[in-house]
Length: 340
Ligand code: AHM
Ligand code: MG
Image (cartoon, rainbow, N blue to C red; front, side, top):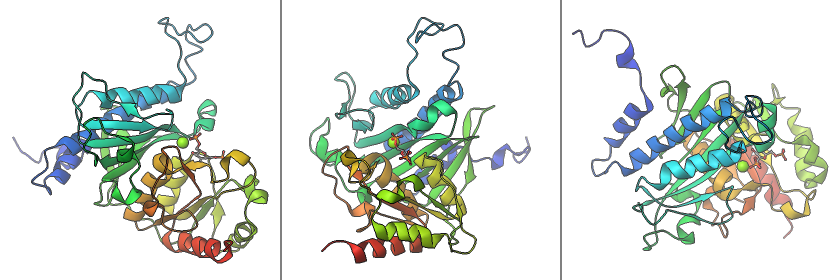
């Protein structure tokens, strides 16, 4: 057989990519590689559910009961279940935390406990689900540091710079899986006819040009005045445009590929969210690692998101993320006007 026949020898599936990455670490057991592969599988299962969203109440369903007589679950609950169940039995994870769950997610007694900690937002951008606009899954992986076999809260409250991998899945016009394990940022697009993620965006670097700013402008009256002024000023930048979807994964992804900055500062609109809206562990820290690996930066207005030491699993934070120089500029602005 001509070993170069056809074009399939050039195709980099996510499995092949992960195996090739693992070769750089001769001591690796495959546990970590397989965890990433498990996440790719979860992404495919969630894709299937997302693509069927909105049909649950049409195809033979009455109320919230579907055609199989099962209760129609909300998509974010479904995604949460997929992430948990596909990772609970593998023996690779010691403990999990989800944006959807108040407490830590323990691995059931019957399953082996692994060396990794999995933290995720199963379906981010939930306000967009019912209107058929892009949503995403975000994940963060730490190595377990406690001596406790089943892990503990301390394993989850590690600063972002300690993540061994982070990534997201974007359920857009295609599904994309984007991740970093500290060796660049790599993006894969799901080929639906073969059900495989194929490498489509190797070694992503955020462009230095600032093409977009993304923020919820309706909140600006509730921002600190210097940031509201910044938003007036940014409109004068040459070639700048505004894009805001309201799904962090989608907004971040666009700016990562095209060049831009995303802002979700603290505001005084909602007294329960004076620390910002986004969650440090599930949203800000994983995307901050990707931003850093792609040559960008993420700040809470005072410093690097990756340096923050989490105090609680559902902690919120202001977030400025994207183009390195621009985020640094916003950070300087915040610092210069912060009350002493
Ligand atoms: P969620 O986790 O409840 O979906 O909220 C997070 C989302 C982000 O995806 C998005 O960037 C932000 O909230 C949008 O918030 P807003 O509607 O206030 O602009
Ligand atoms: Mg979220």
